[in-house]
Image 1: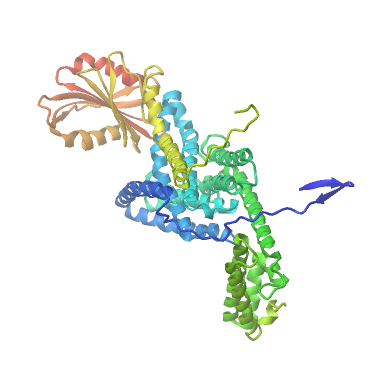
Image 2: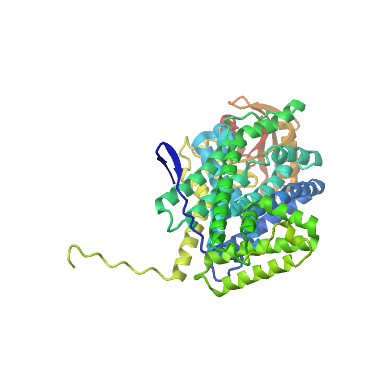
Length: 412
Length: 193
């Protein structure tokens, strides 16, 4: 909170409320949760359709289909890792992350395909075919697709409520749903719209991934997921009305961005691609529609990461100057690039084994923050165990020749 | 109970029961999103000039006495009928001319379905009210389990957006002549994006 005092802006210390469930790891397979069974039923039924569609594409163009998936893996795998690693301190359980990806690629694409068709009929009936040809994509897909995608994030939350304890978690799950959706949708576009020949697939890859890959479903659903996470993780901290307004606002932003993308507004895409200039115009046209949203999401993600960093600092502040954590180590922990740098220095000074041990120590010190966040008392057994583990790792590291010189000094 | 007394709060439902509520609500939202368009479209019915939409790109206005007899997707298709005579309209993306589309339809749809099949030698050019042009042929044949020969007229149109539209008006042989003018008029007034 900031206020003016004597003409100067004074910054009040911010009260950082720790999420109680930080660090808890829950699997997707919660047999007793009704939400899991709804998720499983929809995914299984949709998978039948998805598999048959992929088989059809493979029959239509075996080489185009294989090339499509090959190219999309080149794009999807690094993006998957980037999203997964965005959460600097508490990585989400892999089964839930993959569950989100599968929802996007299988369930959301099939549900959206059915729903888009139905709402497209409504647009055609109300507006006529000429209007429909221009506006159906803008008036149906943003609402339909964003709803069925964010439903996946809500289901993930209902399956494993403990896992969504901050906005960043919502972004990770939402972006994974969006990534799954965009990969399967891209294969459809490459084969059905761009013709499916290797040349057509390459053209589709250029238009949809090289030119527009930074915008689109990953951002839309990431934003909606942040809204869901804000709504569910700030319970007891922020009033219901405000939580709902923020969640709906973020969902509305995703819908609006998707609408802009699909609408004829600000459309600088060439109507046909005849020369090099037309090809070069495509990324520019995509940036006009997509870059503002990308910028907005980057700002939101940075804010969410800053909040996570504050949590980590709050949780570990009282553990500093102990046999398991020093002030220097805390500063390093709070800065991901400093963490990487410290491991590089350790490797140079004391070898690979010491660098690996330092990495383990840093991970356990972060886990200590999470254990502390959910500990009921100062001397809870889990907390005591975690402190002892960190202390023993630290001792082991300091016993290695040259390791003490890399900024890990025994305190206390 | 005194006026100032606070009513006792209701006890919260047991956790197991509460776990179902958001799941049911979410399932309802998904059902509404996926089926809502079809239900709304059916409810709108023939509201706007009684027109029938074929997918998102074609609309045909039935003449009085004609009604929608069936609808299917993949590709988008409707059947209008006056009782004895039918007009099938199908729309799907097509890369080629209207003559290509006509040839493709005859070779891949009509002829394989027929036991005996004869098609007019000349392709007749047609022009719709919207300015789009197409091609038309007439045919007669024996189809499937139907004992009587079927007489029909196929019109193919390809829009500038790459939408191929097939109009297939057909009836038991001898009856088509009574309704062919209405079929042609419906085709001529069809709106194609």
